[in-house]
Length: 365
Ligand code: ZN
Ligand code: ZN
Image (cartoon, rainbow, N blue to C red; front, side, top):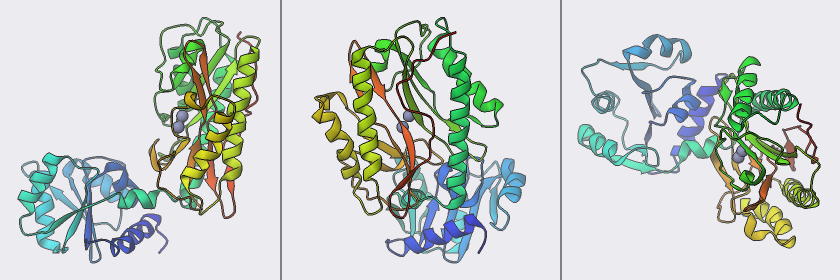
């Protein structure tokens, strides 16, 4: 079987055997894309050992035929509701007990589906497809590498043109413009561009304030590559002669990042990777200033399985790609975060991002 989507569907069917369900109704747009290659929306996938059916409407008939050859589509008319189409397909295919994506659907949808499906038994499944998506195949890794290259190139070009008058929003726009110019779909999320004390807010939104000569600039950005996969990076640098405090805090964050990366290997608990970085920051006396988890899986989405935090239950496997992003945030002063993207290999990890991390002083033109 050479079709990578068919290979993924086979893996889902295999994983289904460990559950209460005989089939799965995939309703998450991202999961449908992962399993079929379909890039549109409003389309579900019924996956059963003897039946694979996309359920969609006439707007997507041609696109489905083009993007998902070999997966038959049930096209509903504009007079039929989606849940009724799903019930129709259940009636035709008799899939047995159907698992639905309990973490994805609304309570209202579940009620409608239950009422429409009548005789089909339904059961809620946890993140079955999400768990499989955490381990990337070779094609996905290549797409993520491309998204990292795009983000890095866009960053280098944007940073070379920074002026003190530019607002944070302008810097974010420059990053986005560069990513699109270089062939990407755009930013993978609204970039965080935070100057001076505003960098103390980990999830800050760029403002109309000029980056000025605050001395410190934190940029957290990523690219969505042409294939839909993303990158997610952060660099913090000086826009004036760095203070001793900035040098010190930046050094601690960088040590924490390297301690985590050195620890990563398959079979390791995600909590232990988080602890490797957190220990460094605690030892330096900044434990309470690192208030978020160490990292998260990336792929078709910016935050996907797995989680690296002190409360995660995930275990690392070869092929997983995630961020390592320790930070120290000091109210009224600013913040430093360094974020890289890593791939778990057979015996450690490969750092996929390549931008230098040393505290650089970027001259504003
Ligand atoms: Zn980020
Ligand atoms: Zn991140």
